Each structure stands twice: as C-alpha cells, then as structure tokens.
Image (cartoon, rainbow, N blue to C red):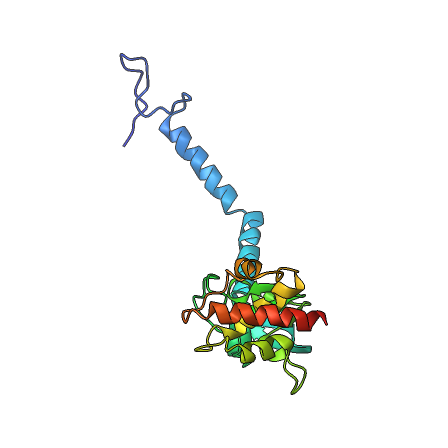
Amino acid sequence: MYNDSPADQSGTTPGATPNGGSRRTFMKQAGGILGLVMAPPFISQAERLTALSKKVAGVSPVQLKVNGTVRTLQLEPRVSLLDALREYMGLTGSKKGCDHGQCGACTVHVDGRRIVSCLSLAVMNQGKEITTIEGLAQGDKLHPMQEAFLKHDGFQCGYCTPGQIMSGVACVKEGHAGSEAEVREWMSGNLCRCSAYPNITAAILEAEKSMKA
C-alpha cells in the first residue's frame, strides 16, 4: 500500500521515486511501457522471431557434392558433416573418434584442404568439393598413399587409418613431407593408439615420391 502523505522530516515523500515522482506515477509509466510492448508492431516482431526460430530448428534440404556426386539430404542445421557422411550417406570410411576435433579420425578434404569433419556443419559445405577416403582411389586402382600404407603396414588396428591417409595426402600436397621430422610435425593432428607412427611416416615419405612422379 502507499499514500500520498506530505513530505516527512527528511524532506522526502514516502513511495516517491528517485526522480521525485510518486509510486502512482511510476505505476502509470510502467503500464505505459507494457502497453508499448504489447502494441501491434512489437507483436508482429515477436511473430517474425517465432517463425524464424521454427525455420532454423527445422529440417531442410541440403545439397552436398561428395566424391564427385551431388546428393540432396534432409538435414537439421545442427548436423555435422561427419554425421551427414556416415549416418545419412552411408560413407562410413570417415571414423568418429573423439568427436571433438582432436584425434583426426574424421579427416576429409573440402576444396582440397583437410578438415576434421566432426567440427564442420553439413550446411556450411554446400557447393564445395568434398572428398572422403571412399573417393580417393580411381576405381580398382588405389591411390599411391593407400598403396604405401599397405606396403609399410601403416594401419595396425585400422580405425585411424582413413584419417591418417587423408591427412597424409594433404601433407604431401601442402609440401610438408620433405623429411621424417616434417611429416611428424604436420601429421601431429592425427592420433594412433597403436603407435604405428614409424610405419605411417615411412608410408608418407614413400608416397610423396610417387605423387610427385
């Protein structure tokens, strides 16, 4: 409750706001602000935001060009490129390891550059050239990097192998396969629990010669 009693001994009016207005005045002003919020222009804005939210959260068609073939998928915007490849296109060569971009098992090429596909959204890669391990060989002819991995037994358990090979190909194309130390440095984003690093390094160094020939 409030009253509009005269000023007390301190010179202030009980219920007064700092700018000198009474509570009744304040409530009237607050009611005015609420009325403005509920006015038609603001309601329309809210409706537009709601419609936008539904559009962002919903499924929509996404076109991805993977290994030379364009596929149209129905995806939510939050679907990663890795999940689009594995769960929606059946390309399970790219592995889901840590799902945090730390192990490199999901490495693919996008427009010729290596990326960890678990950290990229599928919708971000529309109109780009995506290459997975399935698209590396030419028919029955293996890529020189794949042949070198076989020759040097660079796959051990095999789980990290697709990502290792995709990074190895990129490592050579980037010009970072001049020495064992350089290969180890530029392949450090790909982890192997079997510790097959000497074999992997040897395979990349050999493939580097074949790819340049």
